[in-house]
Length: 278
Image: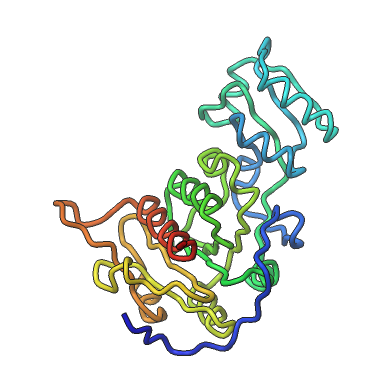
C-alpha cells in the first residue's frame, strides 16, 4: 500500500530511551477537585511502584497482616522513611473507598502531570515516538488497563484532556498495576491545539473510527500519535477534522464496536508488531 502521508516538519530523534517519569522531567503540580480522595493508592503492586517512585508518605497495613508481600512493603517504606500504621479493615475500606485493597493502602503525594511541551522534551531522544491521545475517556478501569498495555508495548507517552475525562485516581493506579509510574502522562486544556502542536513537531496523527484504513495496512513509521475515543461516543467530531488519517478494526460479528481498552491494546500491539518485524 503506497504511503500517501503528507510531510510534517522533521522530528529530530536519537536512540530510544525509557525511564521512570520522575527521573526524566520536572512535573507541574496541579490541584484538582477531590484531590484529597485521590491521594491514596491501594493494593500490593500499585503500592510497591508508588513507593519505589518515591511518592509514598504513609503506609496503612491491615492489623496482624503477615507474609512476604507485607515484609517487602515494610522494607520499602523503611528505605523511603515512610511511616507504617497498622489499622483495622474498616479504616482501609474507608481510605480505598471500598476498593479491593488487599490489606494495603498507601498515602501518596498528588500525581503531577506533564505539560505537552515537557512530554515532548522527555521523549525527544526516542526513535520514532508513539503517543496515545485519550479523547474523553471516562472509565478509570479502561484508563488503567490502557496504561498497563502502554507500558508493556512501549508507548512513549499519553495525552489526556483536563476536562470531561478521567484523570489519575486510585482505581486507575490499581488497574494499571503501577504502570502509571512508568508512562509519562501530559494533561492539556485543548486537545485540538495539542494535535496542532504535535503536527508542527513532525507527528502524523491517526484517529479511530468505524470507517478508515484497515489497521493491518496502517503505516506506523516515524513519530505517530493515535487518538482513542470516548467509550460510548467515540472520537469527538472536532478532532475528526484534525487527524491525518482514520484507522479502523474490521469486525464480522454482531457488535459494532470494541471496548476502548481492548481496541487501544490491539492497536498498540500492532504498532509494536510492525516495528519489531524480523
